[in-house]
Length: 134
Image (cartoon, rainbow, N blue to C red; front, top):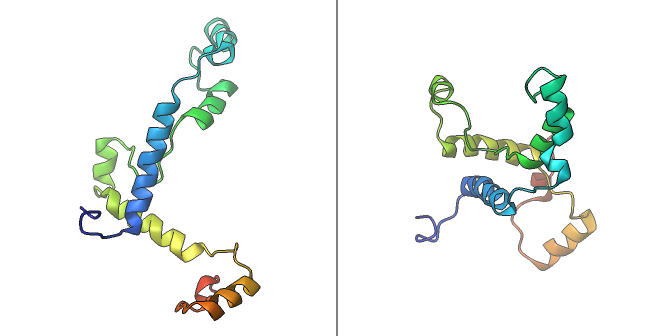
């Protein structure tokens, strides 16, 4: 709807980022090789271990590599979500956006380049507005 009205929402960028991350993870597929088959880990857990993989170092490594941790999507159970007040994804994105806007300041533009850009273009935002509040 935003696109058809030529509208724009910073919150939608955060939501879209989660969606794109999920799509990229999905199309990457599942890597199958000797290391990912984890036969040594399976053998160790089944014969010597506690009967689950949560304590295996490889589990954490694979979760950090393969599991998608969304920034705004809610992965809580329905009960946890209800107990949290049933926040919508837009509400969550709005809170995340405020954190970003309050704490992110561009550092890739040097003061010299900033002065040159301001001399050439009618930039309305004061440079002080791009710096952390002290």
